[in-house]
Image (cartoon, rainbow, N blue to C red; front, side, top):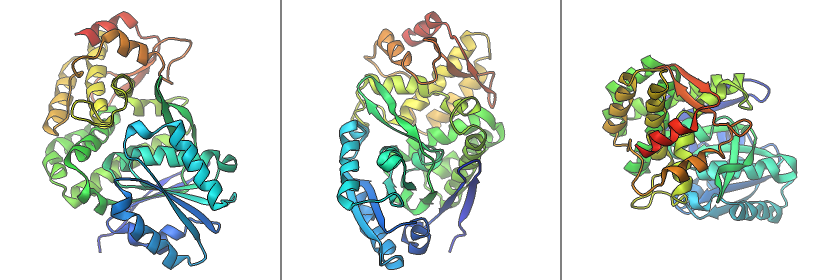
Length: 367
């Protein structure tokens, strides 16, 4: 059996990220994190048919005393709403979940965000074990404890910081991932190289074909290295007061695109999250050049890698620059009503820039 790789997140709420194939069938590993006798498995309509029964069987075999219920939500970003959150809370109430209950988040980023937020709110906080099934959620949303739902005005505006009790990333689930979702996850992997690790970025330039082909060893390496970067940053800045904001390279632009498209979750024209982040990273690089912070050479290199991974690098047609800027004004990083963006001085040198000139941003969006 392939060895399990473990990345440790320290700080005031330490936990482990286990990475390897077949982990969803490891009942002892799953059950080790259930402190009480109640557990709710939250999944979505795409993932649940593939894995929910097997995970439930593994948990029950390891913990016959566990009162386990499954709550399935519709798949897609458009369902990461307060209404869906209410359904999850009602499922916990129906289970009779006590303060030592556990929520298992089985799915991608939408499931992880929503399940984590429900766990944060039920009885002022119960345990959540993240079981990410997409590359994007394995390297980003399942790690760090940022949980939220969307509202029409913007993405992730209602939420809480709630670190997971554990993250268990079964890389075998990536074999059932649609190619588009795999590519979208690679955008977040590339982000780690872009913000702080030029050597990792160069490795991705060499290995992107293996990653796209689903090579198990390459994917495990990419996931582990991404999680190591995020773990280090989260440990130092759990509440995003400083360094952690660097993880949002491209996200302010990307979230604006997603919000303006209505979170349609990857229809024929709308971008999914990772695709929007890919576009956003290129925009951040171009804005950095406009502001005299960097040359365009590294952004050209970033754009080539994103394109080689099949990711978009241009704003979709039909989105008004003024509307995108209005969405960006609602970003959580902003202070005193001024744009605060993650930009860079070049590859591996991301920085948070306060009070960015809106006229420059608008000109970039229009261009």
